[in-house]
Length: 405
Image (cartoon, rainbow, N blue to C red; front, side, top):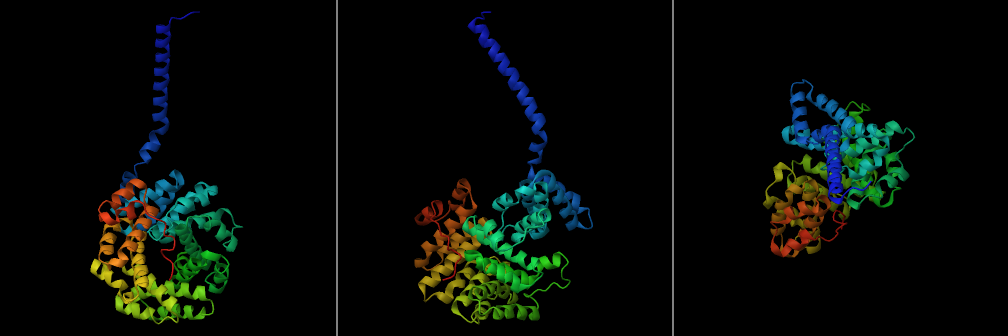
């Protein structure tokens, strides 16, 4: 039957409108709950209010986040944790909560564990490696045949971007101590077989051996040492570096780890810290020790003014190459811990010797580009000096930024 064109158009329009109306209703019916769940701040406020009434607040948070990740996934739970940290300062020490979230996320989808490693923040800013530890522990619960060895470590961490892969290897170093029940020789044997990832694997291994956080958390030990406060524990950590003196890379990683401990042990007194690191047997070990100490000094509330940060590299003032490398390390470390330090880091770069300023801004630009998307990068760079702005907006790769010299 023939239908005139105007009538046909009207019918088509009416049919399209009906379909559109149906689709709209269906969309809101299907998506009403997920849209509501995307309000991370509201969920964080809800958790805070619920757990504030609980005598065991930390246990309450652990239970809530486990359920949250199990029901709504990793991203929702981790973003809610970020919002909760703005409301409850106690959750900023979040290694345990990150651990719980990751275990539950893997339980929700056991095949997702490698994808979670790629998208989780496994840096120091990301709850001190708690996400990585939880992801691997969650995987172990579903695959009892999985063992942390040279092959699995390399396969898991080796394909990631360089800065992420080193953080990944560091986390696996921690877990090797847990897996071997604090047999550092067995753990070192694995780290020694992972090529370019070996240094950070050793470093994580020595850190876990020093503090034994995972061992204590899982009930494998009852004594929880703190080498930053206890002289005997401090001496034992130093002795480990001596025990590995015939393994140069492990020895350097040990002295590097010792830098963090020395910084806190000497209560962030720069002169004492520098002096303690100079007792290392070799120049490279002394610099690695002091450089890692710097990463503790620059974010310490006891060592916050820009003027004090500028003094960190003065021991190398007579060697411009070393001074510039040190300055780049300070800048990179600040941004590595938090992109909110962008302006403070720019101020730091401007206070350096002129010859070191450009390299410092290059480090800032590169580190920001690793952590921010294009829009947020532009915002972070907008107050930088005009002659260095391009180094922030269009940074060049600087993959060896944390390497020794």
